Length: 418
Ligand code: ASP
Ligand code: MG
Image (cartoon, rainbow, N blue to C red; front, side, top):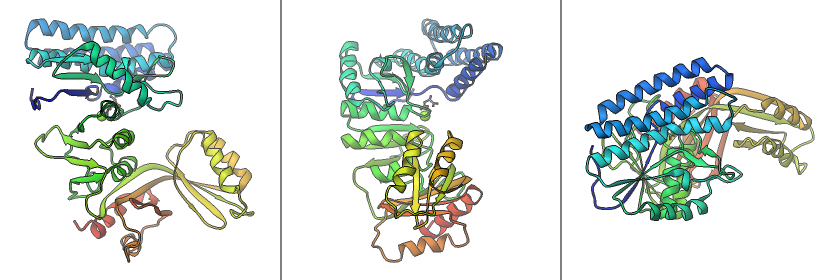
């Protein structure tokens, strides 16, 4: 096992092993359907996979036994939900097993390899409040207590993703939430740096799945990184930047496959001007409300927002004209109800299968000719909406997902000079 050994204490936040959380989601799905047989088969398959991993990783018989006990314990918990009724607590308990197994197993392996390592049980300090937002003051107070309780070590290992809710029930920070755990912990202990390790060497200036010759970005500001993560750059959980920004702690994205590379560094300041990257977010729905009695009538926008607020659906983009307002949402949950309520305020049109393509950088709005550069690049692409000036870091355009790749390539060719 290769480790960074710089003599500094480290808290290592681990996610579940690849594919595990998806498998656990599948198992929970079967249990919700009452399909206990399929759940049992899926549990058995996953357990076999873990037993093989234990055999491959553990050198001594003593540790092999210990690791098998960890696996057995978690799978016994999972199987306990295959009889009786199934509920959210059951689901959250099952989803937590991936991180519980990975952390305990890695702690065994680290100690086997002579690294003084202790476990920090995330459920003793990670908490979300009634609004399901991370409770940073609670985390800060409690991680300190837990660190004291477990005593000195070179490495502390803890579970990403999992937490308790305001009622003390097991819960989680949503899919991909381990990054967010790391950043919350970094903020809670005022870490020197928060590092997120993935299998790519940092943020790229365009989506490598759709555009050739993308380049790694060396540096981004918190705001730029937040925009990129939110608008589709899959590498980072969108909320991760927030706690780091509050405490002004640098975040570094590193590549496990290439550890000596500096990755992308995210700090308060933006380094250099101009366009840094473009990214796209799919699965967007555009909603247009056209009103006879107009926007000018005050209260119109408020009434519209109130409908989305009622259903707790966040709005991503918004543009207005004298007679209509267009906005986008990334969830079709409650869309029928929302439409019904909006019908009271005007004619409602809904377009599905749209993508937001977002251009991020330190975009100086006064820079002459900038908007025309963007428009020229997008010549021939049907832009449904454009949002410019909301912040100096972002210009967003809404296009049909079918035209997304073409949009990304055009922006890359014209704005990123690749
Ligand atoms: N294991 C969780 C998931 O797959 C958390 C994470 O990987 O960040 O969503
Ligand atoms: Mg992850």
